[in-house]
Length: 351
Length: 279
Image (cartoon, rainbow over all chains, first blue to last red; front, side, top):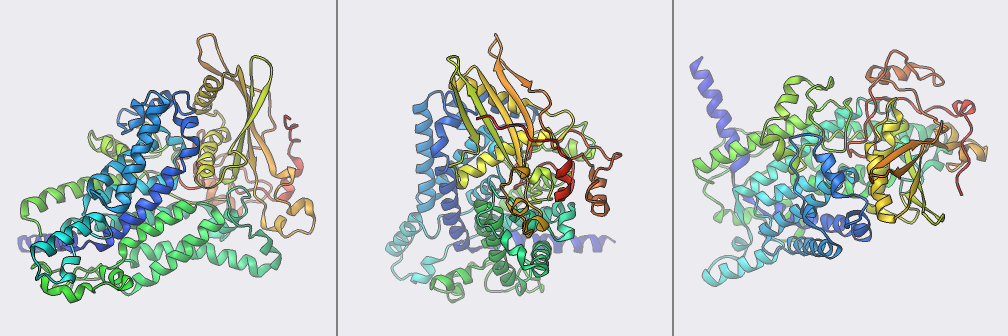
């Protein structure tokens, strides 16, 4: 019995260490940083037209209202710079600083600090008016939070460019491919958190949808596309096709549920992963068109990128494949996430 | 790879964080939702007392709320019921000199993110009125802020629902049936006025019996049972749910506490006539 417990403990510990701490190429994290910054900037700039109307000194969403929501529970502690804004000009100043922080995050200048600052600005507006929050407001801060944990400025950034310049100055003999790749355990932690959280989100969506009859009846997609004010495109005219159209609606409705079910379990399989990621593009694009939540669809697609491998990203960008730089990889090796074979040595951390 | 001490500390953080995330996901999707994130209500019948107590753990609760991580992510997208339809709020401000001004939420010229935010706000305002004892706190507060901002003496609020068409209606030849903007697709949910009393506090006054085309409330059992019920009688008298709360910010949906199937076209024949829209 004691041996069994020791064996379980040591294998769990080894697996845990391998899963969370094996250094990985930070390029995927950097890509997510750039795309998340773009979405965040879009999200933030869309507040411009109603900034004073909503959050100004005589705004629709006063501090009193925000405090009333927060004070509904003793456990609510909110981060909001807007709590300290007392005039229109101060609001403009705070808003402008937020744009600057997001721009720095986008271009990767003092990336870690910029990402933390950007998160604070985004949370400030969310906490000030939680009644305006939508699904994208749930996903955006969590992605930004995870980006704060890792070296998201290692690539596609001014920081990365400066780092490579410095490395080449200090070590002229250094291979450019080696200089390009930034191995980090913190990157692994950040990416793994995104992966685990995203899987939980899909699971929660699946369970919630199965609570409703329309998802079993196969009509949920119709009720999404039939809302005149929310949809981007009106496809209801296709209903005149007849029974074939109803079968299509049923198919897409059930397809969404099956996709979410498959994602939860099969995204961790290296063979199924590319298929699920590609299908995800079509699913979310379709939901954006018929449901109208474009920003939600975009941020979910960005989050899905956490399951891309660094080799795929580098291959797509035409950069040095990570495997060619294996000679400079950290001494600690990783096993594939698709299933550990108990091997002690594998070249790169795969997802 | 980092040293053992660093790995141990990071592991503790990971366990703390993932525990909080998992707790947030354990929120009963049938539970009333308040403006997100979820309120921890120890007396709530919807969640176990154990999970509720765990969610109130000091530090964990503050961390999760502050980082906006305390969300259940139960994005059902649509259940096809009344609360998932589009809603609008018409506001008519009356100023001391007698002139009036109309504002709509969402504004007609809004689009993209701005429109989605207004739609979220309108849903938060509208969903409570599907219950027996609607919580007007948000409506009162917004009305108060609007009156103080504009200098108006009264704001008349009209909340309307824009019902989506059924498939049968959409493919019908009769233009009155397949027109998504036909007036029969609009239903008034609530009409009232907000004024400021002598202390500067807002008071909400209901405007008589507005044409309430409100679906009967069904509870969780009614949701599954409604699939087998006749379309003209979705009500399950034994299944009542507490007042539906505002949306928790989950996508495009209202409260899961009461789920009714949208009525078929014939159901509107017995609905009371819609009131005249104020010019």
